Length: 406
Image (cartoon, one colour):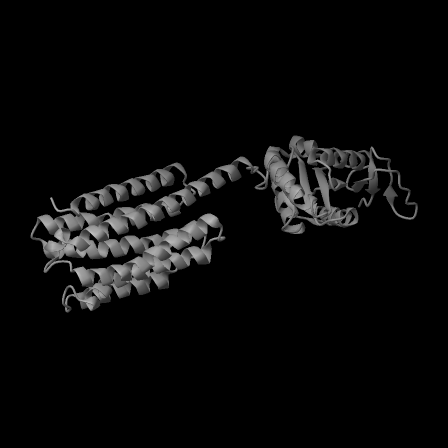
């Protein structure tokens, strides 16, 4: 048995294993559409080692030769749209078409060139080099360039460089007078082993990235309120605590808003739960529109929402809360009953835990609801008297109420 037969068979098994892994991901996690492209890439690429065995043990050199060349080029090229979908980027169809055209031009040129020359081997490896270079570009362009993304890009770049090196080695060692002699050549053994090592390393890195994406999607689903489309209480507490921890050592101010829909039970009782659901979704949309992108939003109770504002003083938080109140008051979405909200505001202390800040914001929210609803109340540690404004003032158990009822 030729020495290259064993690594060729191993390459078939590895491609099938990776392809099956991505099929499992695609079936079990429908959101991972990129896994379908990755599975197709490995299954199509598997045609190459199968074709090599066909070249070696049959006389059908033309069909198996085409299977080897186009199977490998197509398998590598299918990785590009997969990476684009994985990183939520538009599929670069023009780049893919250009590489496909180059592949057919190279195949045409090979029929008119002598084997075992540097020009022949470079032309043969050119489509593979272009396809892997496109994958490298796609990772660098579309990814957030975290450590795992950079490792994946480096492996694709290494594969890209690997192909012209193979061309030089093939010209030096020779691949045999005919395609059928390839499997018995020394170059075949070196080529199959080196390519297998690189493709397995890249496949593992890609599989790790895909697994991390599945984990992130599952975590996001577990932390997202299905009705409101924003964080649920668990997700809010995790994200908010993380944001506070990041700003704690830097002295960055933060503030917490608790928002409650006024008379929500009456909406459900008189208009039905469907109207209540629409009200929940409408308020979540308003919060997303009015608050800054850096804010952490969450639905922390039935009709209660929380907003954590970073880099916000108590006064800035009061203005933000009033903007939310006014936006809800003026909103007239189809199918949504007129709404008002009560809002409690608390500045978060430098070393304060989120749970303590939530308690203080909840005390201010209670003040807002007890003093008439449709207003903003601010929690203070000490009594403050403001006689010249329409503000209701409480002690440390309550808050300062901006009573701007309409």
